[in-house]
Length: 368
Length: 181
Image 1 (cartoon, rainbow over the protein chains, first blue to last red):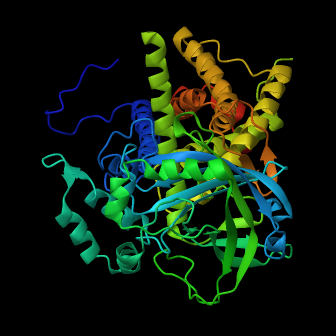
Image 2: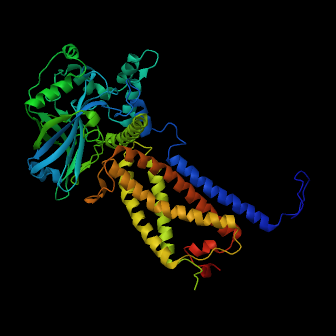
């Protein structure tokens, strides 16, 4: 070993042994390669971009809208499971090779809900009602769909959805959302106008059963020739609407929708027609805030028959993620940017609640 | 006769899987932190690529058990020798475990396991949210562990190649030493 050199002493110092220079350079290179790799990984995972809109951020915001959603879905948190069947008419086979569209009867596990972050919310607080289905074909292929009773969605992009959710967060000081925040959101998001017009004017009804539920996002049906048909679909009720003012509904109690559903099912099954609407060239497939013109052709794909209601805590729907991108071969997502975001956010919400339910079960087990 | 290099099949599998595993780690960590449309494309690659890695890993372990590996240099310090053996066990273990955990996690979550088009796999675990929670958490933390092990492996390989220059890197190098000398 050469003696340590005083770095402050003036040049000319003899050059270090070439081996040592090489070695130091090699160490530096190795450290740089490993460090850059780790940095690239951290960047990809979003650790270096705190502003990135991640599924976790959206679910955090959804979780903070009042009530205690731990162990529950973070949106459409209050719901009820159902069992039923989908009787496919076979008419959809001209548009899509999906096996669930071939004439036949397929089992359904579904869920009715209201759009809220609070699993104990009063039913009259839910302007938006929803219906989700999982239809399973004999070959195991699945069609999952979550549909709302509004004709259009409130926003067109994941970013706007996040901003709207943040504006709906409960202010800890008042225990309520800040009305000015939502007013500001809508004032700066003109794309929400069709949704707001619906929310303001559509009659309130007494039931989940009399609502039409719409896919909102566009999808693509792929036929046997490989041709792609842009569609949206709706579940059109056969029950006549029973309109009541929202104040009268609130007076029925917080769970009137569940009570109505169980009472109706005690008398017999409830049915909807699953109707696909075909886009004309130029109809927007990437913007769920825009309705398609009412004269677009439709195809009656079959009938959803709901036979049994189940409480969510023990129901078959509880542990199903109604991710709208879980589709059979023959149906594919469109270019609507909400679809990928829904898939990513639902997965995050699902992972949280399975973990929370597991922790809850462990705690209950050890308490026994 | 003790081999001085890994066989061409072993080297081919190594470099193919290196690319696949590194791609997989970046796809995984990227897809769970985005809500952009690329999420759907990333997840559509993640699942079949994971199963491809599982199959390649099983083939690779079979080849490794049959053909073995060139010996480490005799002068390698015991601690480094231990690190080499332990990190390779971790790498082989996670190459098999990560895809199986991913597959089981989707099964326990009640998801269809779709590799693409009509290519689907059966569930390998019951639909159970407690199991899903454990597997989902394991998938994340073992992915971080795998990434760190890959970085350590990369660093160690470069140490052998550039500092120790003991021929260990050459045993797996895609090129032949004769062509370079």
